[in-house]
Length: 132
Image 1: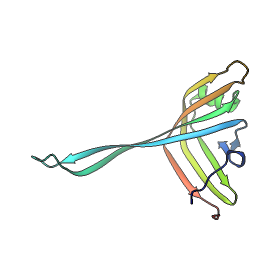
Image 2 (image 1 turned 30 degrees about the vertical axis):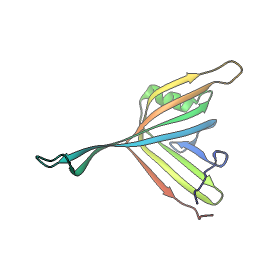
Image 3 (image 1 turned 120 degrees about the horizontal axis):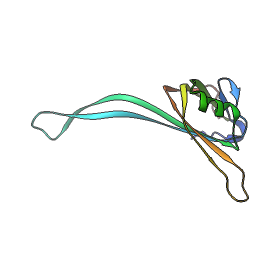
Image 4 (image 1 turned 180 degrees about the horizontal axis):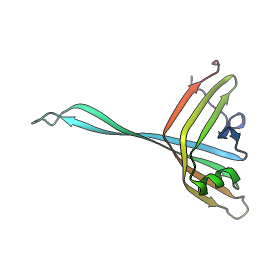
């Protein structure tokens, strides 16, 4: 059975400080790969893997002064997302992050939202709690 982590009981930390107003966090991990073919054959005989890339986004209601500062400073930082469902928890840590881009939007009758796009050297996922 799948574990459904809930936003209401999860949180995001940047360099150990809670980020208030987080609307969401998402990330993707991609890995460079190429296929190897034998001479004179059209069938693949192996695959080799290269660089791994980690990219993500943190969506925040209105804005976050700490993330804004990191956007302009260009300093490296760590993001930790603590995901929770009942007694089950998962920690997702992004190391050596930098802000790649920042987007802001506001619509009629709504509130401001800032999306901070980041890159990371690596991502580590650790399950910490018991199952349900």
